[in-house]
Image (cartoon, rainbow, N blue to C red; front, side):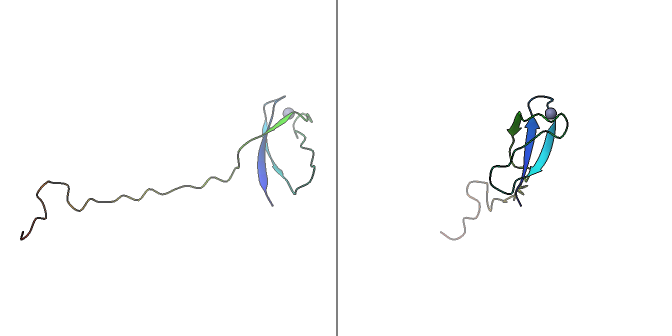
Length: 66
Ligand SMILES: [Zn+2]
């Protein structure tokens, strides 16, 4: 089930809400206000950075027979 994060524009409280589709009314659990704003997805993919070592950074390096 998709889990979305909302922020109440009334009391500025962030909460998560399960949205199963359809016209679900999002109500702030803190103050009960319907003035909520949908935020980005809470699922954040951490991208690992792969370091690539250059084969030869110096000019003239690796020049064998030629
Ligand atoms: Zn609220």
